Length: 86
Image (tube, rainbow, N blue to C red; front, side, top):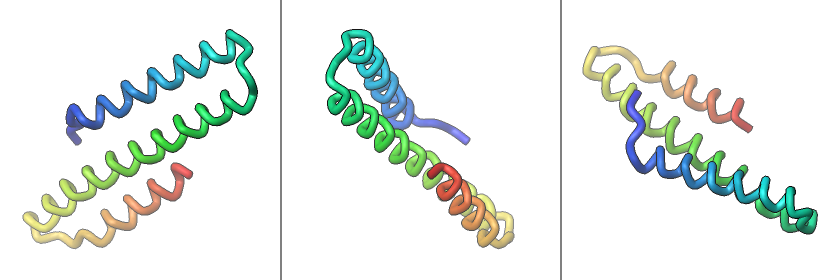
């Protein structure tokens, strides 16, 4: 599996969000604001998981088809990964 710059940049943005949240906590910011930012970070992580799984799935399905194998198991595995991530 390869991880392109877009995927890596998503993780870097999430890292920045988490640092900001920690700073908010250290500065005793309002609970609502901290929760809002935590929720935004969780959403960003969920979307990144989706991008990684879907990119990997496309690559794996293409490889399986080229080798004459069924892609059905790969799709099931990808769906399970997405379900487990929630």
